[in-house]
Length: 274
Image 1 (cartoon, helix red, strand yellow):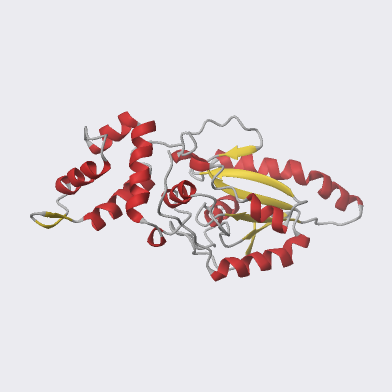
Image 2 (cartoon, rainbow, N blue to C red):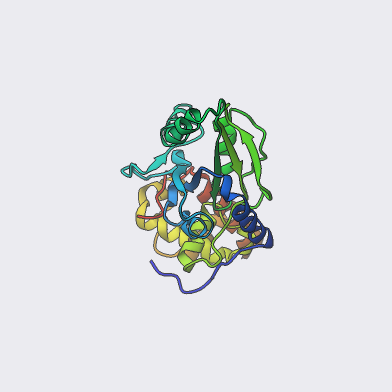
């Protein structure tokens, strides 16, 4: 499904500053944890950033929001899960301990009584980095929000006596590769809704659900209109009583509400890389 209009690019100044600070601190980092979104693993992976700041570091890729995802986990190199699942913490810590064991053993042999392992957690905006660290640490110290751009600086949090994690601001690609990727990143809330061509984003979501999740889409919206986006939007406005007057639909308000519907996971679990 190709889109020919509505390009999206969003790389505010704090992302450039954050990238520079990551480069300065990378020398003390033992392991990189890259957080991605299970609903679109490829599109939410910022390998560009890792290659720029830490091409030789060990990377653990963790796909969060598995409770919203229709992705079958068949990649052993990616840990899939949700911070709503308590057993997920043990899985992550086991992977970290396994990778860190060689360095810890080496430090113990050198006489270091309390060896420390330092991890940097990075990823696109709003993939869940701060929530993930709070979850692993069993604390609510880091500020979290369901919108991109909240974390502005690097912050350390102690996980246990051996492990410390650095939270970092979300870093987007300097240039989003194509329009469709930009739409998907908007729908998984990595890109701010306010900087997007809203009509085109929701039209893309409509077409994607109709093509890949037709039954779930029709059931959720209680509609049989599946061939024309504008007709669907008009019907939606009528059903939700979103009218500017008796002859004019409130398109802006309906797009906002549909955006929340598509992001919520209430329609069905989804895989944007079908």
